[in-house]
Image: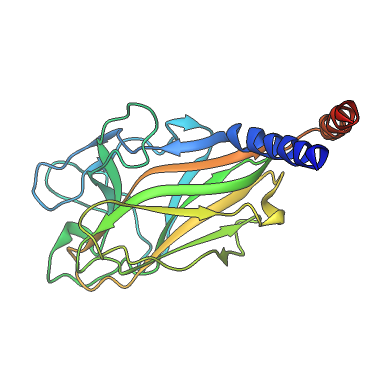
Amino acid sequence: MKNGLFLAVAAGTVVAAASANANLVAYWNFNASTPNTTSGQLGTLNSLAPDAGAGILSIGGGSPTITLNTNNAGAANGVVGTFAGSTLNAVGADVSGGALSVQGAVGGGSSSTVTSNGGYVQFNVNLTGLQDLVVTFSTRGTSTGFRSGQLSYSTDGSTFINNGLAWDGGSSSAFFLVSRDLSTIVALNNAPSVTVRITLTGATGGAGNNRIDNVQLNANPIPAPGAVALVGMGVLALGRRRR
């Protein structure tokens, strides 16, 4: 019985050690932004580059196709930009700064026709040598903003598969955490190109918006076959010594 218990504990220790070694593949905090001088209008996102790790951020969808706001002087010309962010899910001592925001219509007019439903924000990363992808981010919205957010994934950039239930992005004016564990998706393990997409729908007003902040993509290193074999031999050897 003692030997069996020892082996179980040893195996559990190996699993725990692997989980503790998760790599931060890519992280965006959207703090490289400039607030708009006109209340209610999007600020400018000054960089699409990740703040840690490596990856590519891109946007699309909507009708017409949603675009980045590039004017922070009171004349918003796109529906994707920034509003004030949060420290929820931030890495280290990152400040709240900005949050990537998708608005219902250019300019944020309450009577403007919504053009952003079906718009998406997506993150592409290289998972070569990695497995067990987990995606986390903080989000919030407004009552006329996007009432449905859906996460999906792709390994070819064209065919996307939904993962998990949709969340109500407009249900809270305070930031809340969204977490999606994609570790059971074998196709993502060791994949050279993985795209995670957040699609937003259900906005009812041009001034409605949703904010996405502190996006983390984490994964575990894939153990080398030799390392796995050595661990197994070590556990067996320790078991024999206990007899």
